[in-house]
Length: 381
Picture (cartoon, rainbow, N blue to C red):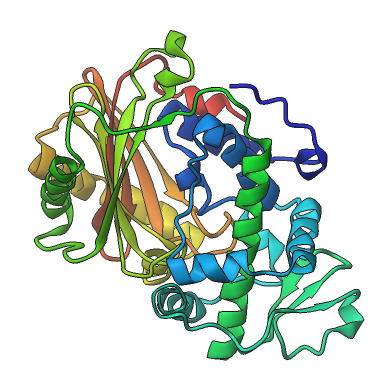
């Protein structure tokens, strides 16, 4: 696709080498903007969204009807405020746009309030406050400070404060998607209609895959949706190896903070590519370790991880293995590690898993054909 995006909104993106490495990994695995949006902020997400939307106009976020009406009824002056926020938001990781990270308890409350915001129309009484300088902030409200382009949080957040934060984030996301659609060109989109299989069959198969990894009745009664992600529709020379069906299982009213599940299938032969539980709500409930303790536990848990992979999927006696402490919503050095990543090579298959250190359970499993140097990503600095 044409990625020559140089208008004002996309003119000043700087990405760290760590972020480039992570995005490159995701692209090689065929992951798409819908996954990236939970990690990356503002400009970067909008740019990726513009590249993905293409001629179909398919976005990455589905709004509930009442929320859609709320978004569409924003005065133009308010829309322009959010557009300016995006222009000045040069953060890569979402939390960089805030004065501080939300606590685990706040994240769990946001997930619950977000569901009520989406499904019940539980909105804040007022919009987020805006001031020019930090000195003008009262310290007690959720407030956007234009001086450093950050959203400031009080030390203790009421439910109304959290709803104000949710409302601000939802409106900013909405404006971001509108801007991304403006930038989308008329080239083919990798998002296509489901073909050669029914969505109902994919959803049923997904329940079986979820049950195998997470236990019976996981996500029963949740909303389901299927996306057909077909990069070969954009560039046939790349082949069909990354053409995939994504089957999502979302809580009613759930959004970016809520726990959700995803199952991924190869579009060509319907073989299983991946199963995962995701979301900041899931992460916030995990046990926290210091970086040093987590590093030691990663090595200690290796036999347990291998036993689970063999029990569930029959893979044993790996040829190569790599492991690391995985930092999703925190950065190394914050002494708040919660997950580990293990990558195994079994013959012609690479198995990439995430492991919750506290519960000693797998939170995702992905399968890919073994290609090239097993340690290629160590060279991406």
